[in-house]
Image 1 (cartoon, rainbow, N blue to C red):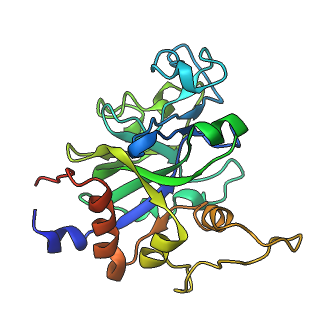
Image 2 (tube, rainbow, N blue to C red; image 1 turned 90 degrees about the vertical axis):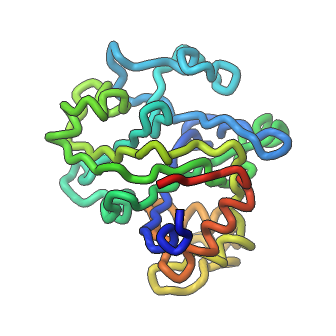
Image 3 (cartoon, rainbow, N blue to C red; image 1 turned 90 degrees about the horizontal axis):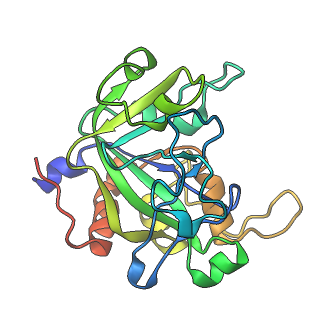
Amino acid sequence: MNLRDLYSRQIAIINVGMSTAYGIPGPLFKGGTFRFVPIPESYPSSLTLTYADLGLSKWVIDPQVGVHNDPEFDTMTYGDYKYREDGTRNIRVSNALKLRPKDFLFFFASLANKKYRRMGRALGMFLIGFFEIRRVFAYDEAKISTLTKKNAHRKRKNDSDYTIWKGTRNSVLFKYAVPISKRNVDSYLRTSRGVHLPWGSEDKNGRTRTDLEVINSATRASRLIQPEFRELFWNYIIENNPKLSIHQ
């Protein structure tokens, strides 16, 4: 693929998967390999799989709990809501909704090595894979299309009004997790005002926030990588996954 063409496409990043809010972050192994562990399912149905079904028993407290397997990297789908229950826009996906076919949706998640998992803490946040967008399905189509039938929102009890992003065959779950840290974030991500993230800022109690807390706060909603930083972003991804290839 022509790299200039690659750099011309939009990129959004969005946070997914297990975190300390739901349990223990997914495992990060020596060398940078990892397992993606989705969050528990809040509205299970008879179609909902368990962590045991997905072969993730070792990495969760209760393997028989239903899992919200989203994104799923079998048929490459990801679902979320355009609006919240109170009718307001879901800012979490506002930038992801700007993506069009051939753009990229990158996923990042909290991960922890053995030491941090014992403490129930995240070691950090890591980019874990991406979808090259094939199509974005609005609810009326998403709920009936054969292309979205494996998405967790299709399997939820009484679920409605979701959007589903469908990836192409170029979509991938990385072999090696890509760290998100102060050093590399400064090379490709800015605030909405175009400045660096507020490293060393204080929380509402006057305590200096850690770098991880700053990153977490800045990425609660999906974020777009600005055009001038896309090449640096892709270089960093490929540096950590040198065998990664994207075909037209």
